Amino acid sequence: MNALQLTSEHASDFVVITVAGELDLATRPDLAAFTQHVIDARLGTVIIDLAGVTFVDACGLSALIAVKRYAREHDTPLLLAGASPAVLKLLKLTNLDASFTVISRTGTMGPPPPGCSEAAASHVQASGPRTDR
Image (cartoon, rainbow, N blue to C red; front, side, top):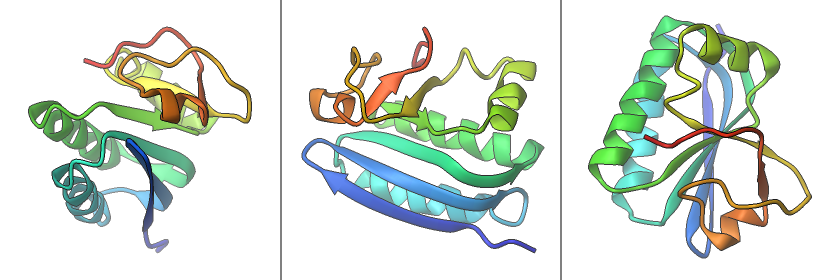
């Protein structure tokens, strides 16, 4: 069993939550509690960096949907970053790719994705035309 590791890094008006490990039934409560705490702190745009995620199942997707709903209820922009091709494929197969703003973490500047602050935009570049609903 691969435990979920969660860390956060705050900068001016956004926070990056780095997720590493397996996102499944066993780790869903950890992701929910951690992200809710960050959202409640009102630190600005929340970027969930999924680059370290090694496995996602239906419960993991459900956790991301719950986090998205919680962020929307608290007027907090939420972005997904660094998702592997396998995670992106899973999001697309389940039509969740249209429900999230999906960005890639790069060193180049690009136009800020919808709901993304200027400071956050300097760390990310849009990977496609996604709408944060």
